[in-house]
Image 1 (spheres, helix red, strand yellow):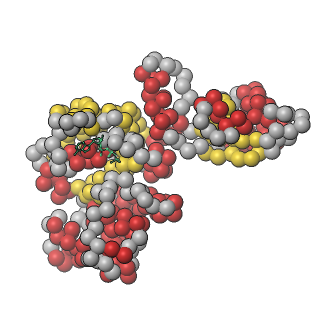
Image 2 (cartoon, helix red, strand yellow; image 1 turned 60 degrees about the vertical axis):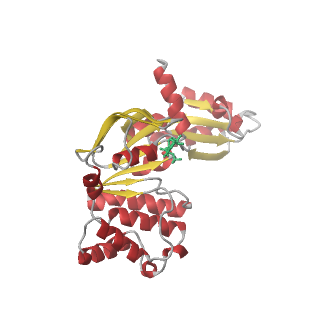
Image 3 (cartoon, helix red, strand yellow; image 1 turned 135 degrees about the horizontal axis):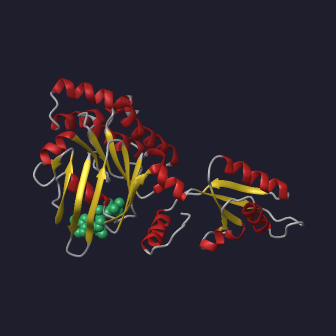
Length: 323
Ligand SMILES: Nc1ncnc2c1ncn2[C@@H]1O[C@H](COP(=O)(O)OP(=O)(O)OP(=O)(O)O)[C@@H](O)[C@H]1O
């Protein structure tokens, strides 16, 4: 779908992309990185809207430097920022975008109705978009990216500004873009956690450089950790230490969260490596056997920083990192 080779973009004061080489195959791919990592810059180059300083890139086999219009015919794009004219309705806007992509008038109207229904906009689609919620606006932006039935869509931070329910809805929609229509997706986010659910493959960039490109399952195996917090009891005045000892004896890798610093109340929290479904039961049983109270046991949110730390230890020749 997308191939880049030593792709570099330098602005006068900053290198937004630094010799980025990636190969993105069909499916749903997440592009994750902190703000300023170079995600939007990459998308603009892939659309042929902004020239690379060095290196090259192909989208659907087309050269971004010379075949931008052909790429934009075949690719849908959802920009990050609010870009919807407030005085027109979703229907008028999406029909216009479909016409811009070359659909004849009747097909443009039919496809608009289908696409807006797909993203969950019904009677509201005839109202001016200025009165829409953020979630509705994001759905219109997704609809205009899909209306001309592209082979690939590039979605720039589609969950930005959404509340948790809106975010889940958007992530489901993105997944279905691929499962229902067979359209490949490149979706950016600064939250690794939300991409893990949605994407088959994740590409991590930092400071314009490729940190990692791997299938989501490889990723989550490397970073999955369970945060377990227990109470102290008279028999075990340091409940966390007692549990750590019990888990270690049972062959489960665990460490105190305080060793990583920064987490509030970290003294009582253990980070347990999840080897498989059985880990949850083993932790529960160990807590029960010790007679401790289980305050919480939750999948820890994955932070991009962890991937960065892991990358550091990889490049320094560290071995046996646990993520
Ligand atoms: N037109 C420009 N002129 C100068 N610098 C730019 C320009 N566009 C982006 N940059 C810089 O390039 C770097 C990468 O920006 P980019 O927008 O690609 O990051 P991003 O990963 O998409 O982050 P965000 O999600 O915050 O947009 C940033 O340091 C940014 O300030």
